[in-house]
Image 1 (tube, one colour):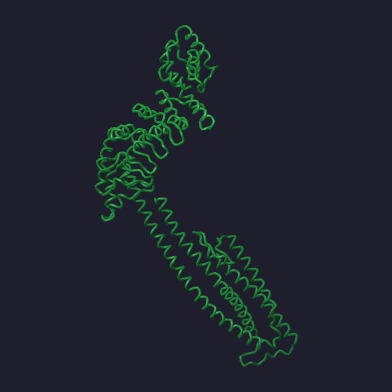
Image 2 (cartoon, helix red, strand yellow):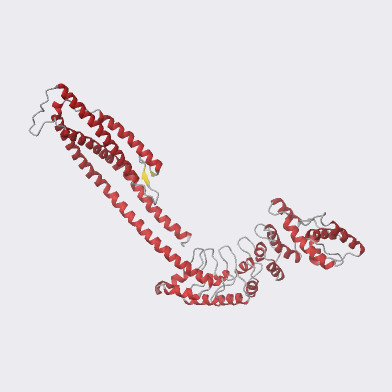
Length: 529
C-alpha cells in the first residue's frame, strides 16, 4: 500500500493537472462560446430552410424546371393547396423541433460518464459546475425554452399564393446557400480558436494517463515492499531472500533502506522484533544503522520496545558495536532509556544504565524515565527505577511528579508500586486530581485498599478472613480506625452492611490484644494521608 505522503503527492499532481484543464476551459469559454452559439443557431435555421425548400419541391403545383408558372386558375383550388402545404409544414416543423431537442439532450448526456464525476463550464462562464442529473435537466429546460421561441417564429412563416412559390423557392435557396457558407466560415474560425486549447487538453490528458500508469506501477511496487517489510518483521529469511532476488542489483541498497508507511525500514523492524540474524544480513546488504524513522527514532530506540532478557542485551550490545549511541535522543528528546521505561523493558534499562545512561535525564517535556514508566503503568519497572535511585520527587514541565502521572492515567499497579516504596500523593495533589475531574477516588482507593488487605492478613492472623472483598474492605476500615492508622480516603466499594459482622469481629479482636504494627509502606501511607 502507498504511504500517506506518497498518496498525497500523487493526488496533488493529479489535482494540479485537472486544475490546469479547468482553468484552460474557463479561459477559453468566453472566446469560443459566442461563436458556438451562433453556429448552433445558424445550423437550426438552415434545417428549417431545408424543410421549407423540400416542401416546395415536393408540391406538384410548383413551377417546373422551365420556369413556367403552375396552371391553377381556380382560386378555391389554390387556397386548398396553400392550406395543405401550411399544414404539412407545421407538422414537419414539430417533428424537426423534437429531433433537435433530442439530439441536444444526447449531446449533454454524452458528457456524463458513469465511472467518474464530470464537470462543465457554467453557461455564464463563471467557473466549473458538476454535470449531474439536476444540471442536465436545467440545461435541457433552458434549451427547450429557447427552441420553442425560435419555432414560434418559424411557425408564423407563410408560403403565400401558389403563383409565388417559384420565386419563394429561389429566395429560400439563395438564403440557404448563404447560411451554409457562413457556417463553413464559423466552423473554420471555431476550429482555429479551439486548436491551442485542444492541443493543451491533449497534453494534459496524456500527462494524466502517464500519471495513472506510474501510480499503478508504484502501487504494485509498494505492495511488494509491504510484503518484504512484513517478512522482516516476522524474521522470515527465506521470504526476505526471495524478494531480494526480484530486485535489480543496482536498486537493492535503496530497496533495503526504503522506509514503510510509518517511516520504519527493514532494519528498524528487525531491531524492534529482536531478529538479530536478519539485522546482520541487512547490514551486509547496505542497511544504514543510523537511519531515523519519521519520529526521529534510531534502531537502538526500537530495540528497547520488547523485553527478551539476554537476547535484548545481546542485540543492544551488537548495535553499539555497529556505532549506535546508547545516549542518543529522538526529536522529542526521548532517549533509549526513556523508551525502555515506557515499554517496561527492564533488561534494556539495566544494560543502558551500565552504558552510562542517567535516571535523571529528561525529554523536552522534562519527563524522567520514572515519569514514562509511571504513565505507562509498569509497576515492576517503577519499582526497579526507584530501587536504582530514580528521584520520585522530580517534576515535569507541568509540575507533576511521577506518582501524579500514574494517578492521572489511572494506573493502579504503578500507584501501588509507589505506595510500597513509601511514596504517596500529598494533599495538594489529591485535591488537584479531584477538582480537575481527571480521576475519581476509585483508583486511589484501590491502591490503598489492596495493601491494607495484605497487611491485615499478615499482622492479624487471629482475625478470620471475610468471605468476600466487601467484607475485607470493611474489616480494613475497622482495623485502621481501631489502631489509629486512619485513612483520609476510604476505599471504594466499602460496604458497611455486608461486612458488619466481620468488622465487629475485627474490633473485638483488636480490643482483646495489643494492635500489631503495620508494615513500613502502610505507616508511610499514614504520613501522606
